[in-house]
Length: 380
Image 1 (cartoon, helix red, strand yellow):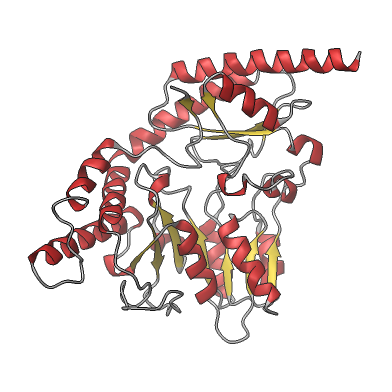
Image 2 (cartoon, one colour):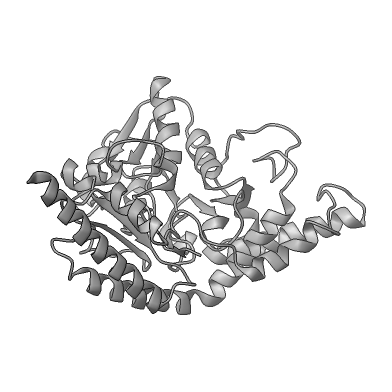
């Protein structure tokens, strides 16, 4: 079995989450909108899960709207967060589920402004203030980048935006379960979460909303989720997300400490590889993420060779894997096109061990040496 190092793409579902979900895939199959006992049991399970997700980010359960995942939650936030002729501002390093709806809005003659980032992938106050001169109605900046792991100062950025009357949304999909999240302390009005990034099931997520925000539902029907997202609730998935959120709260400190130890060991060993570059190395990053490049070694080629040897890493965002060309995140950071094509992302998880990391580095060194040798032979 391959050793998995792509937890930013998805995490393996925790066995305790599966155990919590199973009854709602079998005997407790009732529709949560039904009034009889089986339906009431399903409704109770949904509401208990809502309480667990609310605790994850320190909000009231009524502020949690369940969706089919982070992509739908981001779309709901972006597409319904604007009123009248208001314009939108998003950072240049957002996930495709923010950038694509923003692009659609711009094609519909809605003004969309892109917030630049510095060489470490951070939105500075200067960049934010420049965009706020355009008076955006809605601003979206992700909490932590899925490729570099760089963590934004969301509290400060939201404060700047709010002072200009803008609603602030943050995609916290990657941050959840890896760092403390407090919706109210951050000063945001909307926050996106996803279950399969915190050892829960795929196909379920949530948008957390300030109760003063009136959303425009993107799916019409029976008025589920307090009228914000119609469709019979995915009870088992929601229960799974609730259990994953509960475990994330309980185990956050231990998980974070373990991931930091592994990342430190990984980076220390990687430093021995000639010329290795770790992107956003100088700023706060997620404890599990290392986005690196080895000059002269094509990232996709290295990825395939490591896969052949039983190590699963990625070259960036899984949702952009069908696209050709270098990472848009690295391009926004001003990274040279040639170096950007060498990028490989290693994202650690709670089941990885020191032995896994040691074996990965040995395999990487072997492949780098082999690829360098092949390149020299071809040159001669």
